[in-house]
Length: 385
Image 1 (tube, rainbow, N blue to C red):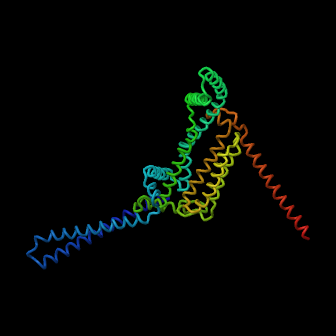
Image 2 (image 1 turned 90 degrees about the vertical axis):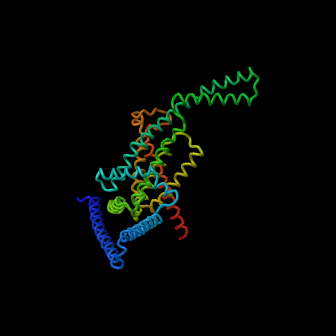
């Protein structure tokens, strides 16, 4: 199988050599003609002939440079990015991610859709999966620390009552001292187990920048950014036009069948509903609002995915699919014990059974509702007759 990049490179070099030879011949003949005409008109100005020729060459060089600058400015105007997206596309992290994707594709020899999936699995395995395991450990430690607090609270209340009588404090003064002591004890426990609550967001700190950088890097490859005149960028874009699969052979175009965007929405909704089902603690109002916000954002991502190149859809679906598998894996008690995640009271011992029962319950309720609607409809028709 012929390497498309090598083929294009050889053709480009051949064309460049041919054009360079023709340009050189034209410059030589033009200079000779001009110099000959000058010699025929003014024989006494032979000493100034070379100076005139050099001046003409300088003028031609300046005009060629101006044309190149004009072409460059035209390319920049035609860039699909603007504002913050242009800054992101030219940033250093995106450049490193773009080089990594190209190196992975060239070394593996896979088509571009498979290279995108493989890079997603590799990056998430070596970056987000360790962060997710660490986050689960922190959350389990915090839950175990909460079990130690009732005894500490009772002891502090006794000490506060004794100090209030001994030093004749008011209730407000006693409450201030009590809250300060309670916070100090909690901070001491957090430092002891190295589980600061801010670490529960560590997955977002790693996953969101990774998602943004890889998305912008793939968009750069599709639009030949940041330098559309580079031969490598043009070759990669050409490879992506034939590097798809199945119903999307061209990764630079949108998925007109909408299969990938719909799959993206279903996978993300499955992750949200799975986390809701496996939650043992009472749901707070803030958690309900956050869950509904994530549901709305997931649905809003579907039309966005319908308007971007298929290369981005392939990455988003692969990333979401990996996230779903990761969540299912980290809910298994045996896997959690093998990874060193402490056992807690809120841990679900049979997560898959609970999800299956929940799905059956939802299906049964849906069937009952549809049967009731059919019965009401038939009764209405009977009364009408």
